Amino acid sequence: MTTDINAEDIDYQELAEDHFAGVITLGNEVQGDGYLSEESLKDMYEKSFHDGINASWVALYQGKVVGFRLTYAHSKWQEDKWCTPDDWPVDATKVCYFKCNTVDPAMQGTGIGSTMLKLSVEQAKKQGAQAGLAHIWLASPGNSAYRYFSKNGGVLIKKHADKWRYESIYEGYDCPVCPEHCNCEGAEMLLEF
Image (tube, rainbow, N blue to C red; front, side):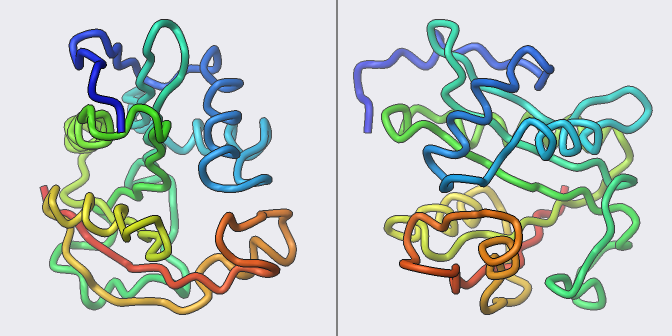
């Protein structure tokens, strides 16, 4: 954890194509090789928009991408077998999807993750969303992802075994904690706005 970074020196910007190289590098370093590619990030970027409003953000420190939050607009994603919309307290068509939040380990503890979440929520509300769904990686060191999302108001809906197994077998995702194919558990969590 970095303690000598002034939070005021961190610049937050809406995700743009100029940030792609830094986002891909950071994502693959933190989340595992194959987590992001130019093609997958372009698709995620396009899903960030509704009515010209972008819900995805990056954090820059001294010009370098040190954090990113990828958020799909409520109108640009579909729930799948890892979702239980009958248990959501809001209309499923009004739920955005918090795809990923990643912060450089050297910059953790500076408020980057929480700030980007707040910025994404502000934009998602402008897009018409009433809540955001996330699948939280329960194998994060110290279960920090779950603690972070809970601290910011996320509520557990359901735990899902082998959430990222398909990606590790068929899409080249290399889980940073599983020795072979990923068998990590994901927590389906909802944050009401």
